[in-house]
Amino acid sequence: MPSAPSLHPVYRSLNKPLTIAGAERRLFFLALVMGAATFNLFGSLFSGLLMFVALYILARWATVTDPQILRILLNSSKFKAHYDPGKRDTSFERRRRRG
Image (cartoon, rainbow, N blue to C red):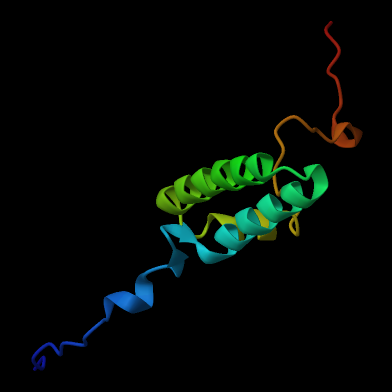
């Protein structure tokens, strides 16, 4: 005899990504550091702010599209492609002759 289904509460904060101003926090800090580096390199506040705003908009877009995109991009360099349809192993192929 089946028992009554049990309910387990799931809190929304467990599934939400950690964001700062709508961008994933690591991407936000990357935009902030790159903006500061641009400011130090060129000595122009405008160039630093422009770099920060451009990277911040990119970080917000990436967070809205897929919050785990940074983790996927960083892990993708560790693995080889399993299947590449452009590559063929020709050592086992034999040609049939006509005739």
